[in-house]
Amino acid sequence: MDVPVIDLSPYLSAVSSGADQLCPELTALCGELSRSLRETGALLVKDPRCSVEDNDRFIDMMENYFSSPHDFKLLHERPHLHYQVGVTPEKVEVPRSLIDEQMQEKLKTMPEEYRPHPPVGPDLKWRYFWRIGPRPSNTRFQELNAEPVVPDGFPKWKETMDSWGYKMISAIEVVAEMAAIGFGLPKDAFTSVMKLGPHLLAPTGSDLKKYGQEGTILAGYHYDLNFLTIHGRSRFPGLNIWLKNGQKAEVKVPVGCLLIQTGKQIEWLTGGDCIAGMHEVVVTNRTIDAIRQAEEQKRSLWRVSSTLFAHIASDAVLKPLGHFAEAPLASNYPPICAGEYVEQELAVINLKGKQ
Ligand SMILES: O=C(O)CCC(=O)C(=O)O
Ligand SMILES: [Fe+2]
Image (cartoon, rainbow, N blue to C red):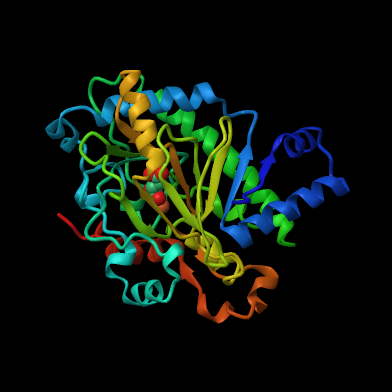
């Protein structure tokens, strides 16, 4: 699969040198970046500010956390806050394709070789949500902007989460700026509405000791409801993505790279030009190879993703921006407050309205 790797360094250098105008090479790079988001819903980037060591420190801590006793982890569950902070246990979040009839119909028309694994129930992954960035002092969407939960016995929790989270946000902001330029929008078209967004560091944890059989679905076929998603490299493969042309691709994230995926909010802001990338996480033969290797090296068998969901601010309005207001499918994306849209989606995937 051809998801290009884009090095953010030259753009970062140009910005830090205070250049007003981009050179033609950088303008072309922005074009390549936005084209990849449009055509594949994905992108690999290298950001010199995000090191492999940072990613490892974060994954090590999350492996420790997810391998803690079940009842300890349940102390960090906040169903009344729609699980938007703290832990979400396995078998809570429902993949959209399990309940969305339109999506199910579409799946039936897909050629067999590209068809996702049909979900049979809620996801087997756990998750931890940790807010990154300042919260708005005044918002209509209080629970989407709740205070974080810090588990006991992890003295470096806040520092480790914030350190990885802020790095991921910085990378996403550059991608968002370059994408805006590539799409022919003002360079702050996306970043200005991301300010004070309810960004979530959202590592998943899947117990491969319990769920390590080939074909097991850890996260069923779905799209992400946020703006852009960014992941560091996981120690266990298993993420499959679908390109805009319907083809399925197994993602291989090279060492030192970050994977970006398009979410539903960028689809809204581009009037459907750039659609939310569909994906699933399934145990494959490559996952099993990685399990064998981890067993030999006596490493954790928890598959941790170093995922961050970047959001548009809850009180900002989602609508096709600039020339995307004239896009052929723009009328499918009527103006809606980002917070209201998120709440609708959370209700569908079983994370909202639980007490
Ligand atoms: O676990 C992963 O690698 C990604 C999971 C995912 O798709 C999600 O968290 O939305
Ligand atoms: Fe996802």
